[in-house]
Image (cartoon, rainbow, N blue to C red):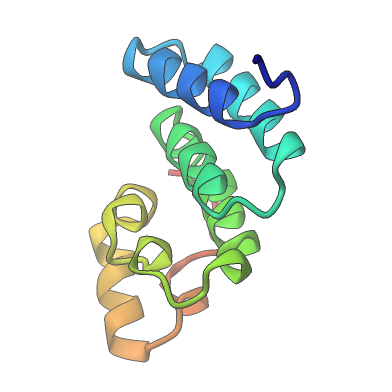
Length: 112
């Protein structure tokens, strides 16, 4: 049976669009998935990665920080994890490491 309410088909569609470089369609699909399953901690990571890859680093940081509460101890929500390294610049990562504060790393700075 099809599950029209499920988030996973939309997540998969977003990943396909993202892989093809169709970022607007990918973002639309992942936002739809997030609306259907707001407690899914993986979906905001996909959104943040899409935002970063489209040059909206500030927006990606805000998404990353806003949804960390869904899985706060996960390495995926670490600025040094795979998504964090796409969102934060090397300079910001150094500041985060030195201060121990994600906000000091430029989380509230302008897109670059």
